[in-house]
Amino acid sequence: MSDMIDLLLTRRSVVAASMTQDGPNAEELQSILAAGHRVPDHGKLGPWRFIVFEGQAREDFGHVLRDAFAEAEPDAGADRAGLEVLRFLRAPTVVAVVSCVTANIKIPEWEQQLAAGAVCQNMLVAATMLGFASQWLTEWYAFNNTVDEALALGEGERIAGYIYLGGKTEQPTERVRPDLAERISRWSKS
Image 1 (cartoon, rainbow, N blue to C red):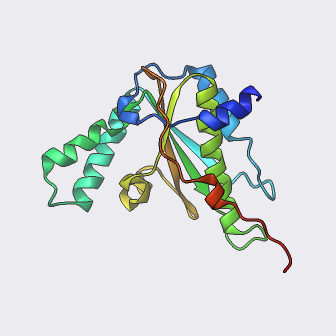
Image 2: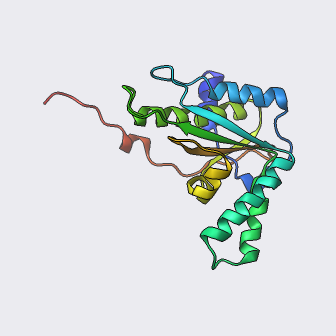
């Protein structure tokens, strides 16, 4: 089995909260972003973009998350909202992958959205190849208008996912998966 197939058959996400602060350097991050950028793209639209959070920007954006959470969940209390400041500190690098759909063109919007999803998957695979932990999350802040405004998302843009990148202390264990045989059918003309 080739190394790439082996990687695809064994790749696992690592929970962001268990990541170490040993994340990708500038060159490694550039490789991860470049791998994300190399996905099928009907019409050569490039219907995605990246927003990178590193260093102090992670905590600064945490204050945006805290305020947005407090606004959306006023009964949750200040202590619970305050936890949002720590959200992006779980990993040394967080990348927001933004789906950028162009409406009313011959390329279906669904295909454009799927391309952004493929970007996220390629980034996870590239991070694993480079020895990093990674996790693709959406959570509440991927669907919040206040957060979208803080990110300056434009018309037709939405978060495809936040990719957390960091170090890992151990290899992740396998998880239970659906039975592949039950998910395969073969069409034939009856």
